[in-house]
Image (cartoon, rainbow, N blue to C red):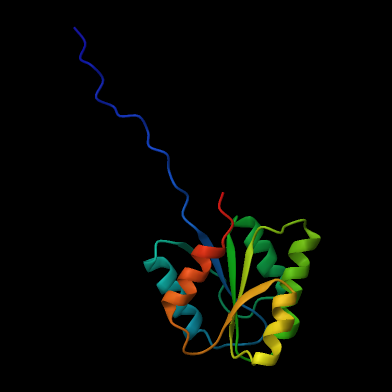
Length: 144
């Protein structure tokens, strides 16, 4: 008559870390951001790239719409002390406090404390190893 079912129970799927790589403001330099995108994908993460010239409001909307675990923000033009904290503030206004915020770009040491006080972690500069960035995300994303 019938054969025993050979269908195995579904294994629990592990959700991959979702990262929005975001270029803010008028900074048109995206080579570093694209390298980060590739490294995160190679590390098994899902990556959404914002493209160039985004406002903090656009980044927050995309982060919410895409249900990301982290936002890796990149700026090379010196506006990081204004734009990165604005993203943090807008997320908090939406009641969102479980998205890891990461800064990257040309960030002087003196600015890192201000960014950290506003919830932006990492604050990686040129020459940071890709593995360091990947591990920072893995170690700091809120586990679901």
